[in-house]
Every structure is written in C-alpha cells, then in structure tokens.
Image (cartoon, rainbow, N blue to C red; front, side, top):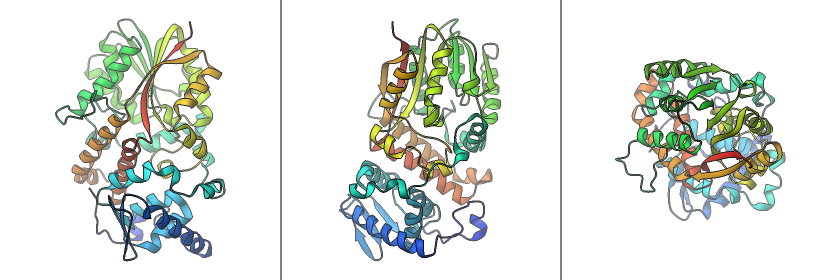
Length: 418
C-alpha cells in the first residue's frame, strides 16, 4: 500500500516546515558519498529477495518492489545521511514501494549485513551522533515527550482502537484472526500484566507512563489505588477525562511528573513501553527508581520493545530517522542489557517473561491500515502530505522490525530475590 505513488518533487512551500527536505544535499563531499552509496546499495540489493528498479535496470533476486524515481536525489541523501537520508528520500517521493512493509522487512532481516563487515568498522566515523539536546535529562525530557505525544489527541484517536492503547496488543494466537478486534487484544495485554503483578483490591499501583489511561482504569476496576505519571499534558488531560467517565476518579490520580521525581511506596509498579524513551545513560536510574519505590514483596511489570544485544552495542549513541522524526532521544534496550543493569544496580531480577513480537507486527498492521483509510481526516486536522508519508513510513518501518524478528516486545516481571 502506497501514498501518492506519482508524487512530484515537493515545492519549497510544501517542505518549508520540514528541515532537511527542502534542499537536496550537494557539493564535492556529497558527490563522493553519493557515489559510494550507489555502489554499496547496488551491491546490497543484488543478492536480496527484492525487485529494485533503478537507472533503467532491475536489481535483486525477485520479491517486494522498490522504484527509485529520482536516483541522484536518493543517493545524495543516502550518501550524506545514511538511513536518515533513506527515510527522507521516501518522504520526498524520491523512491516508492508498492508494499512498503514487505520491502522494509527484507532489509530489516538482513540489516546486520547490508554493509560489508569490513566497512562496518568505519561506522563511528560516518554515522550521525545523538544531539545533546536529545539527552533525556530532566531539563529536556518534557519537550522530547511533547514532540510526539502532544501532537494531537484527535490524531491518535483516528487510528487507535477505543482503548487508546499505543503499545503492542496481545492476540494470544499466531493466526491473528481478523474476528479478534484490536480493543479485545489490547485489554488482554493489560490484564495479563495486571495478573502477573498481582494487582487486585487495595493494591497500591504506580504507573510510569500514563498513555491515555486504559491501564489505570482497568487496575482501578479491580479495586487498586493508582497513581499514574506522565510528561504529556495532552495525555494527562484526556486520561483524566476517560478515568472520570469510567467512574474511577476517586481511585486514580494522574500527575505530570518525571519518573525520577516519583515518591512513595507501592506494591506494584507498571510501565508499558516507556523504557524506550528513557535513554541508555539513564536505564540504571530508571530501574533503581523502580526498586526504591517498591514495598517489601513488591513487583514490577515492564513491557519493553527490545533489540538484539549486538545491534544495541553497535548503534548506541547514534542518531536515527526515528529519533529525528518520531521519538527524539529514544533508544531500545536488549534483554541482556536489562538483566545486566538490574543485576548491577538493583535488588530486582527478571523472574517471568513473555515474548510476543509478531503480535506487535499485527498491531502495527492494523494501525497503519486504519491510518491510511482515514487520511482525509488526518488532513482535516491540519497535517500535510509529508506528515502522512512520514507516519506511514514510521508504522511500516516499525512493523518490518517485528515481522523480521529483528525486534521483539516482552512483558517482564521483576521481583526481589528471596
């Protein structure tokens, strides 16, 4: 599924709000890097199960299609800015894919070897580094979170299900029966996390990362007392509204609060797909804070997107397309990193885990299909064509990571050693 397959070169008026897109990189340095990128790209795709049309030639062994419509621009962006440039070239229409997810899934499955191994030692000299403004310190984090989560509650309402859950659902089957609606699968995900952490009547719960309130609502319905903290003012407002409408305002408080400032003692701490925004340097602080907040015998339930440990080490400190356009400051941990950090900095240990990465691929498929079907309504909210392409690319890029099994999502139970 594509957006505007015959999209012309964008005008300056169309791209003015998108720094990095209005001007195609040029100059001697770009000429050299573009020539290198052209050779590496052609070498990579020749052996992959894809069909890439470029310069009047068809490359690949056959499979999902990609059409490079403006090769000079494509390689200029790819050469100067690597994967950031690759994504930006899609935003401008320099390349298209009939099935974007399928094409990106092939690349994700081979990501460790797209660049020849000997050249990977040069990664540090050419990759972009995370800007200091993207460090997830207390001074920066509120603005970084707002960049994404304060876009518009109405935007998220357009493509999320009725629970407004913006994390992986749990379908409890590998068949992904279309008869199982997304809201049911989202509630199953929440209920499993509440079950494994033992949330019930009288449980004191701290939720780090409110979302739009569904977990807090379901915990309160069990009789728990919930404090939920967020850094998104948009989410706080709507979560409070939804919690009140569900009749649980007396059991749930939603505060604007950095997790590092949380205080009190709780029987359970839950955090769903929030660790991805914490930042590598603050992972010890995140887990130490949870450890300090838990009462004796307390439990923590974490849902986390994970990447392979070797890729985490290879890419730490890098600045990616996702960082620039979607989640500034974000970085994914590995399962090994979580085990090592909790062992070194806390009394907590992972004692139960459920992996369901393919469920995330299905969740993202449904989000993307709904988003595309409601594109006219997205435009009605004031978002332009570049935003539509950006969001579609983001959802497909993410889905490809899970479909290829490069990424995983897990629910982790952390308890103290006896």
